[in-house]
Image (tube, rainbow, N blue to C red; front, top):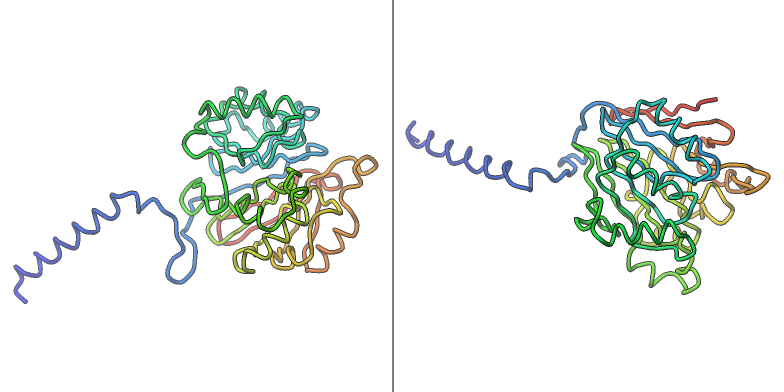
Length: 307
């Protein structure tokens, strides 16, 4: 082949590569052919904030912050103190797993206070909760970017950065085929279940999913899809969750529970803790250990307890 032809072919190849990387396809994050995830940049810190009975999880990567749930109204001052201590002034994205007060009771105060840009949820509403009804009205207007895919369901994926995304496992139409009408009316069972990917590190967030929803997920997904390094245990470690076939597939090394007053709620349930320990997980909870923090660079990770 002459040098002229070599340069011609090389130029064509460079043009094709330029078209590919200049297209939207280049923004999709996918495992490499060897099965390893794309490398993220820097360190990710995930903190289960100690807000009593409720969920409020902070995701921090550099100056970018996101929250999965924002706790109950009685813990508003506590939540603000936790965020101030971590120098959080703005939260770009908020994910509401479901519309119970202990997961979204602060939301109407939180949105303007932390200059939130995007809100994601499961599209549901809790007619018994005024804040849920108001939030539903706000989101259905398309505010907070909701019209651009704010309603999440199984199969969706939310990109948070290079090698950093949330994969949505639930809700989905499969629940209708698997759960009874009574089980579907329980909004714990139709909340968001999402798997966080940060390089090779994974963490599963289960909201308040109870055994029927967990059973449906265990039937639908393979062990490879469910398996993770760290599990945010469903429903504050209650006796109605952590269905054994589900957690056996998830098989986390650490199981973290967000819970409050044991005398009032009896969380975490000791049999639930026992099941988690039986599959080999180290179990921590916010009531006993304070804020629980996971730090990862996408390859290695460390779990820290406050006390």
